[in-house]
Length: 141
Image 1 (cartoon, helix red, strand yellow):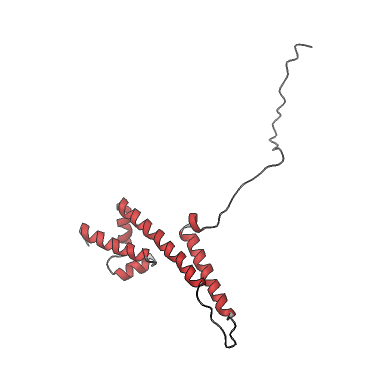
Image 2: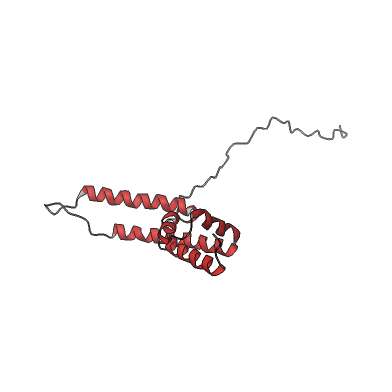
């Protein structure tokens, strides 16, 4: 199906807005009910501006997910009949937060990923197997 420039821009912006609100691409395309994912990716590949717009939407989606972690840990804990905090609820909250942190580390590894430092300090000299004896000038003997 051929889309006019205005229709492409409207549809693309609608989907990017849904992504920026926290939805996945699949859910955003399903909710918009306008184009299949393949057409969306064709538009992203063919237009630098659309590619940048999509990348920005993905960044905003990650920020929304990050903010939702705060909602999880600031939620009032559930209590059992004796007024004690329910340990199953605590475990569930921990699982939800850890899952969101893991997802963020995959969506934006530079910002939310674990920092891995690969530094090697060599204390002993390296043996190369090459004899480095330099002949000296023995003419003064």
